[in-house]
Length: 222
Image 1 (tube, rainbow, N blue to C red):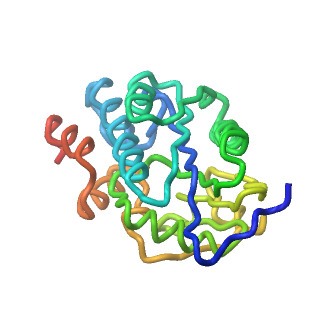
Image 2 (cartoon, rainbow, N blue to C red):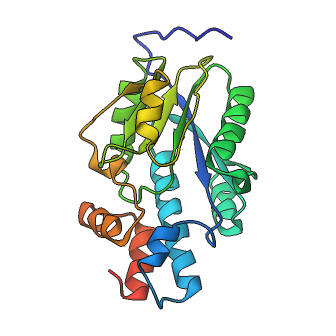
């Protein structure tokens, strides 16, 4: 299907796909930085980070709907209660989960823009996501790298454009080689993904969402 042309006078609306690993598998590097912490505490932190990212994305006025790909029951329940569409399939790897979500989004909302947001950005603000999506709408395919510049936090495509997701270590370079326009925007809340304890501390300094704050306060990590 050819790309749907964009009317310059109408703001592009988007469906966001958020792949979220089950909390027992997610944030392995972060868990490794927290030796001796109870497993349920670490899982609660992984879930809280995802919940804050989802809630901020949902509050962005350019976002029509979320498609959450997860087998985590807590995350799935939170998403369904908020009206999101929830799919399984995150156990096959990140790109497979992304492809599952994008296929559903394309079938369900064929004329909207489709974007993949990695749900490990607890300092995300709706207005920062709006700015990124507005910038992405100018291109058939675009991505926002993480603050280190090598990973990808957001991959966005116009309707009818193949996203060609290539997430994982070094994904920014792969997405650029696959033809996506790199958007090095000054949006620290969007670009501050969390893989390590140092990342988490930097996100806290930016201001994390309420779910992450609550877990950090309860665990004494705040």
